[in-house]
Length: 102
Image 1: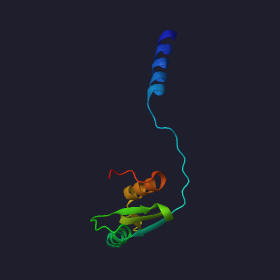
Image 2 (image 1 turned 180 degrees about the horizontal axis):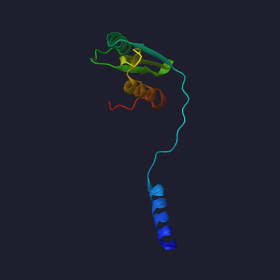
Image 3 (image 1 turned 180 degrees about the vertical axis):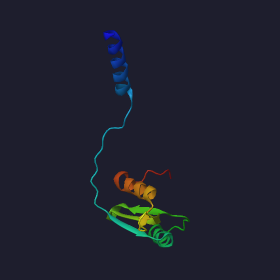
Image 4 (image 1 turned 45 degrees about the horizontal axis):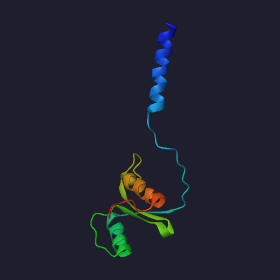
């Protein structure tokens, strides 16, 4: 029985040791978050980039630590909520820079 417990413990520990995980990172960012309609975000993006791109949900301006994100529905209390997926994506741009393929 003792050997069985040792084998089970070893197998469980091996699973913990071999599971790949990314290293822990801590980032402190100071940013301005602008939440607006998709039309206004689109217009601001086109002016900022000089491009005419369709369906922009958000973008980041690293030099002044600004994030522009559209609204995306309302919560259970009827309060508007940002597009959280886009918000997270744009926060990552402030941390990592441009990671899109050109």
